[in-house]
Image (tube, rainbow, N blue to C red; front, side):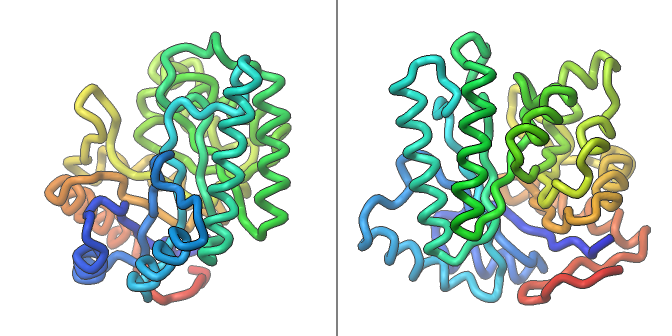
Amino acid sequence: MRRPKLACCNFLPAIDELKTFALELGFGGVEWSFERDEVPRSAEQRQALGAMLARLAPLEIRYHCAFQHAEFGDVDGERAKEAMRLLRRTCRVVAELGGRVVTIHVGRGLDTTHGLSWERTLDALAHLHRFAAGLGLELCLENLAWGWTSRPELFEKLLRKGGPFATLDIGHALVSPSITSRHFDLEDFTAPHPERFLNAHIYHAEDERGHVAPETVEEIAGRLDLLLELPRCDWWVLELRERAPLIQTLGVVRGYLERRGIVPRAAGEEHSAL
């Protein structure tokens, strides 16, 4: 078990404001999310982004592909190829920036899987995992609130057959139909491959308003207990994009860690076991 590093999202547009906010509140890192039109294309764009992100030091940076409707398993072959080109380009950019962990999705922004091929998705996921590994990256698949990755039995198959690492979104997991129906337990997301989970996204739940902050430690304590049992899940992103809910969630998570006698790792602090 490792001490987690708490991270925030890149929710502030000014890089220096983001750095000051994160360090003043004691965050150890930033999860940098790319929208599909934000991934650099030219060497000049990559250099500009690298120079900007260097200003976040000593905060650690991990990366998140917040792409909607970019499915490498699309039944339309051309759309599938376009999505794969985007994801491969993003991996190259992350590697050039010195990153080592990047999170992707399957089915983000979709309300049906009818336009996806299961076999093509598995083959493409395995390909992208190998491609990322060749660049020195650990590719992580995140569970969503709906779709294939919201179902523990299918999420497990994607991890086992596609080979990637994983990001556990505890808010998505809570509202998954597989969990709300009690057909599965939350632990079923992680039990088959606990060593694959490198990151967590933390908030209470997702609803029509978006991500909702927890009000008490008790609301998320069981899920945080689960995270502490995962041997490599030491990057906890408080995934809220407004100051007040983010600060509220930070207080809840710190309260939980204090009860457990755990001090999160600070910016610049490397991995250390409990």
